[in-house]
Amino acid sequence: MRRVLIVGVSGSGKSTLARRLAATLSVPHIELDELRHGPGWVPRPTFVDDVDAATAAPTWVVDGNYSAVQDLIWARADTVVWLDPPRWLAQWQLLRRTAGRLLLRRRLWNGNRERWRDLPRADHPIRWSWRRHPIYRQRYGERFAAPGPGQTYVRLRRRHEIEVWAAGSTPLPAGRAPSRWTFPLERRRR
Image (cartoon, rainbow, N blue to C red; front, side, top):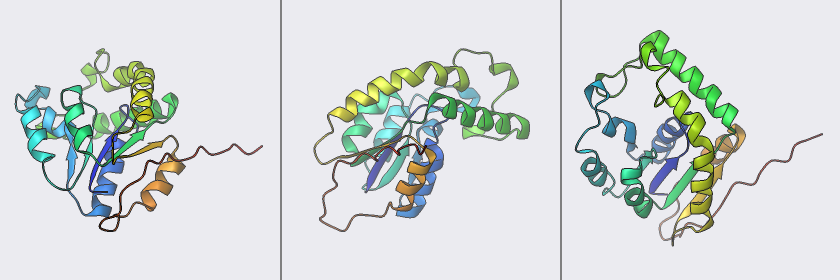
């Protein structure tokens, strides 16, 4: 794995896994939110150019789902990881993240902070994630049905699957081609 894209709905754990994987592989971590949001949450006009420049590098781990750069990044990635937790789990993780950011007033990209007054907005990540979850399931399900040549597609649905996959993620030996692989579903024990 030299160029890894991690996708999934807000709250699925994309940035957490991306940071961990980038550290394991010793490659740059590119967080699309950081490139997208300027001060005051204003979209940066150089977003597409910045993503193009960052993903032209030989190695990286990118996390994010922006449609403006989706085709560019998917074409360059050798591995695409889809974090697809159940809707309730993504919402729980998102609620915890939002509460932490609000209560601790965590500074995010370019000086931005989440604000209490933004919670009721339709585009707030909590509401957005709830609406987008079934859409992403369909969209990424279709994309994963037809992987690009030479690409590895990995779909992870449970925390355990993420842990097992991340623990075993090491660079491939030179000259070894990646294969298509989806983590098998766990069987429930009775």
